[in-house]
Amino acid sequence: MRKDKEIFRCTVQQRFLIHLFDYRTYNSKIDVPQKLTQEGIAYTINVDKKHIPRAARDLEEKGLIHIEKRHVIGKRQRMISYFLTENGIDFARELRNYFLKMQIQTRSTNNDLFKDTLEKILKKFPQYSLAQILSSISQDNIFDQKIIEGITSDLSQPSDISQSIVIYTKALSQAWADGKMTTDERNILENLRSTLCISEKMHLEIEKRILEQAKKATNPIIRNIYADALKEALKDNKISKDERAILEKIRTYIESSDSKTKKRKTK
Image (cartoon, rainbow, N blue to C red; front, side, top):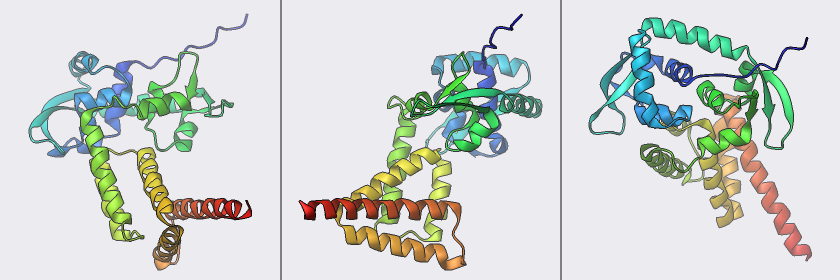
């Protein structure tokens, strides 16, 4: 007899633990990111923040997490934050490995379906955490890119995260203001992005808007940006994956702009 299709299930507490596992290095630090607060956790694992205290109490009673007030980066007062205990780290690691081996159907933004393990899906979409992906999987085992993009770009996200986006956008705009970005500037921005909990996806979206604005202003400017970016990338005689992605993005903008210019001239 054919077995019924297995129903996917990942509880709030499980997603809570997997999320904290990604931030376990902050256990002994005085300053912690907003993602370890009630609001930050609720936003990441896609639940109402009123459910966090109860889930936290249950996990604390099991000896998997501990709760204390820490200074949250960007905040004036200390806030209640959540951390894994040693037992919690071991348990969350096993839980994470269990889910990574699970086979999941994935629906792309073009509505194409393909099946893969969560480990491979996570590698294909590095801009999302495992907790975020788990939070967007339906009960019939489908990970829908449209759903997770809706979750991570939701305008109702916490106000402190919105403020972080504003701060990061200003910093990124300033870095590109002279038409080039040095290695030091990129390192500073990476540290700022980590501090403000800005995802890779959000960073790419912000950078795209900034470059598009530069392209609209004048095409020679974007060409200068490309030339300077290429020069900076070749300083160490090799081009990293991130540098290659940026160069490709700028080159695409130039080609798109040239194509539109030629069409206007032929009309």
